[in-house]
Amino acid sequence: MTLFPFTDLTSAKRRPAIIVSKYSRSKKDVIVAFISSVIQNKLSETDLLFNSKRMDFTNSGLKKSSIIKLDKLATLNKSLFVGELGVVDSNTLLEMDNKLKIALDL
Image 1 (cartoon, rainbow, N blue to C red):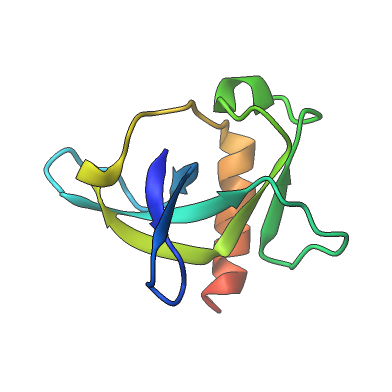
Image 2: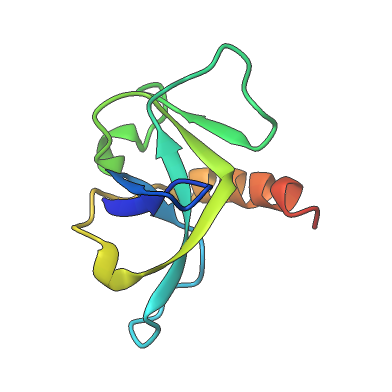
């Protein structure tokens, strides 16, 4: 959980996020993707539906079905993080990589 800024930077809200940058203990900042439990009828090509049908849902620490918004990224100082919820498996990481490539036009 971290304070995730609104896109207009007027405020921030505590919410889950997933680290998408290479993690290093020596770096103070990480890049994270926004996670939302508000699931729209039509998902963006950069949205990853993360629900109880996924094998790694329980290990993620999320309490309800959510969307990982891989086009909503922020660089945050690690001091803003309140704790770690859980982990995702290599299949989810691969899906995230593919959606990040779309979001960043790589």
